[in-house]
Image (cartoon, rainbow, N blue to C red):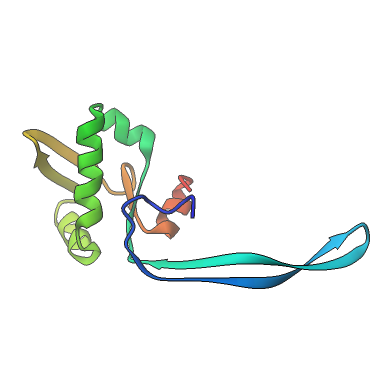
Length: 117
């Protein structure tokens, strides 16, 4: 849950108690733990340091994250493909140019592979 982006859109969520077994002092100890499963719509993960260098103003940076988070992922991929992996837009009269694979990643797998998760 700590890796979930703040603007992630949950589609389903379920919490259960699950049985777990641990080896404690050479013996198997059984207990239960809560497990929460949340399935979210594919969402963007941001590389904070490169993003802060590209957009030093915190308000503009948060606004840019919101713009990316609210875009349909399929349309976003298509838009970036046509622009060589760059997403460009204007936000509050500030030109924003974000690079896929540098400033943001589409999905947890991409983010994990890049080491930001």
